[in-house]
Length: 72
Image (tube, rainbow, N blue to C red; front, top):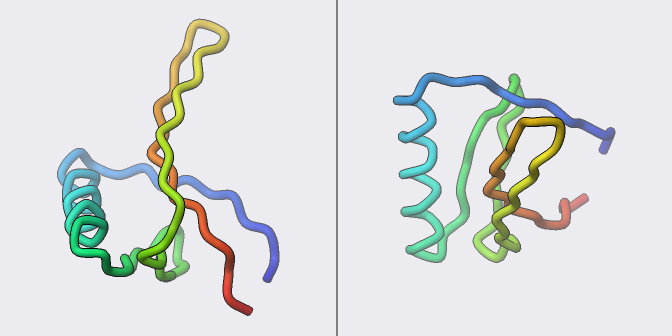
């Protein structure tokens, strides 16, 4: 698989809908399907979860991260 690092801007409504679907999937112990910048993929139920905060140069960033190994 090739490397990929993209971001998708979205409306507050779309952001909330994605977070809600993700939260429901995590709570139910299920995988989560999403499409980002034209690529659809599945986040497995056993993905590692973390919350990251960064502050630099007068700006701040908050990331809710899910990590998993790709199945080849």
